[in-house]
Length: 190
Image (cartoon, rainbow, N blue to C red; front, side, top):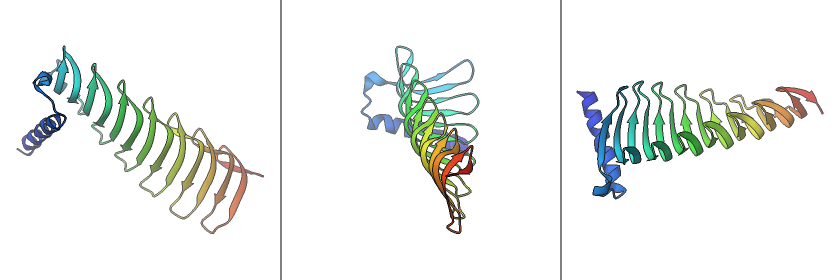
């Protein structure tokens, strides 16, 4: 009963959003169930997903947002069956542009994406309280950034492939600092 109620609310929400975006009669809402068990509820044009819609994969993954020529394109929300959730920009079925990813383990990333990977400027906060704000490339810290730990420790400096590498300053919880060169996450001196 509760599942049916949630489905009805979900469908009402979709129709409300579509109405809000001034969907006229030329943009009728359709429901399509595919042979593999996937389901699409939304706008279609000439047999392809076009406009706003919700796609549910057989494994429980769900995308709700804008479609263009059968591709996730523009703003949308993707929720994985494992509880991970991304809300942001899409280009040709990939996370691209600005978005927020909330992982089921409690980690959260807000920032720029390229080809489904964290790339550009962004902030990641872990459930432990660790936080990184800075540059990313191919999903890991690359460039300049600041990492803080719950005990008050802090690193400001260069990163490469997810590790402290290059010039930086490491400040311990007692205020002592190591200023100089880091290599493979280890302070190597001035």
